[in-house]
Amino acid sequence: MAIHTMRILTNRKKRRADTRPALLIPDTITDTDVRIPLGLHLLISGTTGSGKTNLLLAILSTLICRVEAGDVCLLAVDLKDGVSANAVKNLYTSIAGTIEETVVLLQKVRSLITARNQWLKENLQLEIQPSQEQPLVIIVIDEALQLYGAIDPDTIKQQRKAQDLLDQILLMGRSTAVMIIAAIQDPRKEVFKLRERFPERITLRLNDKAEAIMAMNQTAITQGAAPWLIPTGRPGLAWFYDTDAHTAIRFQAPYINIDNLQAEIENIRPIDVSQLFPDSTQPPSHKEE
View 1 (cartoon, rainbow, N blue to C red):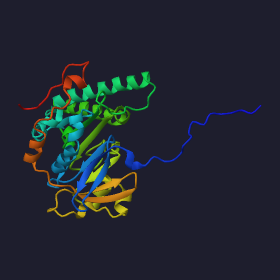
View 2 (view 1 turned 180 degrees about the horizontal axis):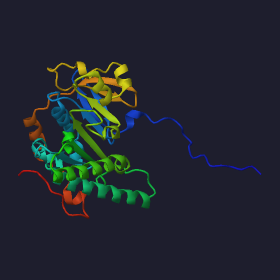
View 3 (view 1 turned 180 degrees about the vertical axis):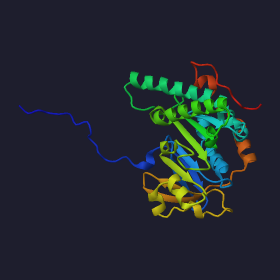
């Protein structure tokens, strides 16, 4: 008697990489967009003055429509007392401007991941598909190295809590629609120990080739990526290694006028913090009224 088996994989055609949701960052060199996968953790490296803050603003500007639609929720960790994040506060559901606020916020996100994992198990699913009911949560961390390097014992304790929570979120975030975008000045692993948790990398100007290899990878450098050769007068000039096409891409992020951006987002109302974290007390917010 013949045994018939069900063919589960009836179509083995590879899904096109460009069908994935993406951040579309305008490239002023080619007048095209650089596609950065949306949902994969992204690390931005660059020295002081290389254009990290402006690049973050360019990324945020590409997310305005999604924030307005309610399928993306932005959270900020800005340990410079929340100054940079507060300049575009209408885009953020919550802003953590101190290490204590950061720990509380990351704890809430970690609990959200646990709840979403439970939903996945109950519904026999493998990953969250972002929607208004379960939005993609993006945590933007400006100057992530400020999560390290404290001297006094109390702050060291808080930093270690934040580092541990961030590591858990990086490990578990992708399937639960939680993404980290972090910016750092020094890509060395002994300085930023969580570097390897970020599959996507954008590199602005760095000090030397060794730093560039750590910030990107050897393949990108072999293909011509040379962020240490970016002149100081070209903030926003960057390299991105496209892991889908296995290609190093050089691009120039557009200059974002903060006044124009503020005017554009003036009437935007992001997801309320009580909606994102309905089963917990509201995390501290450093938003200034």
